[in-house]
Length: 168
Image 1 (cartoon, rainbow, N blue to C red):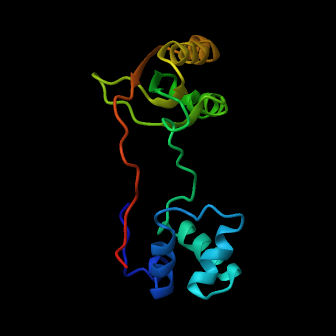
Image 2: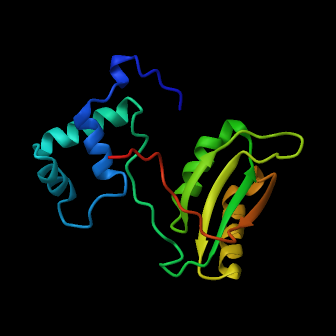
């Protein structure tokens, strides 16, 4: 993301920086994670939440979400499915696929013709390769005639998922 740090809307102060550092490795696994972080930073919970929301709205923080380790949960057959669907239907079809319980994320990507005709990606998780392929067939049936082509790329190793890191 390109960001002009001279734009006051996107500037972070020392407290914002401390909040980013306190949360960049994830929220604590406690019943009230924001309360614990606010206590550690010696600020009110409401201020912590307001600052996180502002940083998210201005693009300083892209998202706050769960990043599960599917292998630790027993899902060993994880595949990125790629689909060639009509561009004018991509939002509708993506929402339908993203709602499936075996899909962790689904998103639109530009085609790279002539070599890469796919524009809709969906990560499928299963215990076995056969189960994953059955999920792919379920998506194909859901898409029906809108499925012009597809493939599945199975994971071969776990990559560490992290965003930008600030040093304390």
